Image (tube, rainbow, N blue to C red; front, side, top):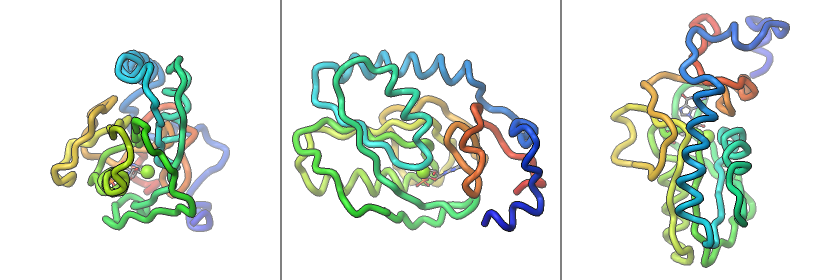
Length: 191
Ligand code: 5GP
Ligand code: MG
């Protein structure tokens, strides 16, 4: 994949110049995370919480949110994929050789974005089938306004965004742009 990109990508340019629009900047993200962390502290302080992050897309969100939660908690990550380039394949693949044993924990599933909802629904139903966790809630950074997420809802979303393919703050396009500190839409000629 890197090979096809190298033809069109100038590896010396600032990443921001690759965007045609910035939807959310650093300050907007930080402010919203402060508010969410307050809410989560109210909900979970004093409980056996395990934050379960879906990788790779959620790692920047995870790192920034975790450091705002000042009480004891556990963290697990699951590696899940469902996207090929800019479209959802609808098929959720779990690249997992060890499924965490979270008996008795309150689980907060963390993902970067709710699009079709397939990913979160699949993970949630697997924990529900085990029937050993205290509670499960889901939290996403971004929620797309789309008909595609057939009834799948999340308990908490930092931002609602239009139905566009976005990159940055952990979200990638073919493995790139995760290190962009803002969230935006790529210029057409780059896709
Ligand atoms: P879902 O299962 O809800 O369709 O998709 C969720 C996953 O698809 C996310 O965890 C994310 O990895 C990927 N995804 C969905 N929409 C976008 C998008 O606009 N940009 C990027 N980079 N990834 C997306
Ligand atoms: Mg993902």
